[in-house]
Image 1 (cartoon, rainbow, N blue to C red):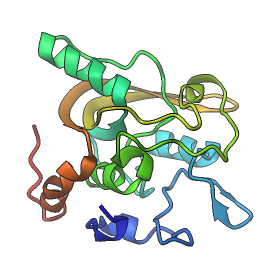
Image 2: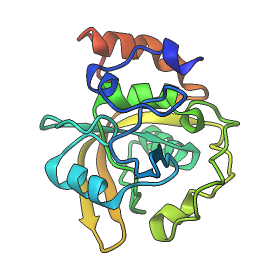
Image 3: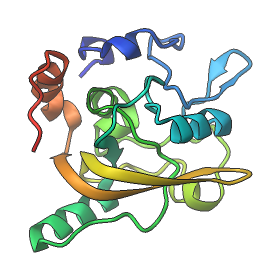
Length: 196
């Protein structure tokens, strides 16, 4: 699916764009006038955590649930916990911050890495350390992904990273290819999103 055919949340529409036309997420750093999509800006991510701002559009999130896009391993862990009737909590912190439901549905379809199981992370950025080190450059996303909602999140701002942990799954929308979320995104933008 072409990114420019995906309905765009209003706050994302106002984001700066890269030369190809892709909107640049709020936590993406810029270097020499170019966004570095494979990296996360420490100060912007810290602001998002502390002020409850969406990592995609950079605008405030209301109280309540937060969403994020999860990859194959976390998607499988959530699915297993839900199937067994157990609570899920990502005990391993991530550098990926939360966002609005519409923004995460949108990101799941527009970000080339998140959208398809055979997509690979870029190799141009330096390999990160710590929790972000699990995001191996050149690695494929994996068979499944999901847009998941959590009742709450915790964060820690260190000297070099902002780390997040998410609690209480309240919505789980798995996908192989994320274009299956297109109708859900349209409904969300129209104010008719279906919460599960």
